[in-house]
Length: 122
Image 1 (tube, rainbow, N blue to C red):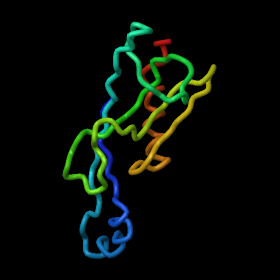
Image 2 (cartoon, rainbow, N blue to C red):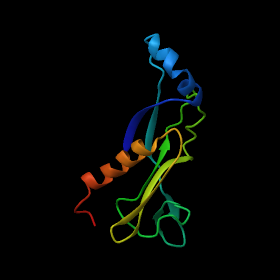
Image 3 (cartoon, rainbow, N blue to C red):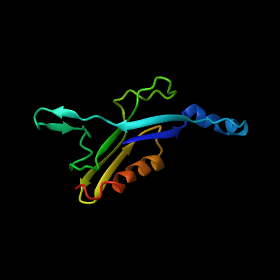
């Protein structure tokens, strides 16, 4: 998965009204991609660490990290910090965890896309 979002830093949120009145675009963009899985020697498979939040293996499970970009003003983009994770915890039950700069709406919308193309995969 790969997505690009327009996000505001905390300072830009505070200055948003004054920038809009001047006709300036206050947002920065953040590019998210799937976190690469790591080989698990004991299980002999590729795995992602959901820290106990996801309990059922599924093709719909994913973690998104910001692509490394030092020009981002809010200090994200180290390639390891998970900004959004979504995974199965039971029959027809899923969990979603997100953090700044994503809003709840953006995170939920991204998670819904995992259902659009993977209906017949399980």
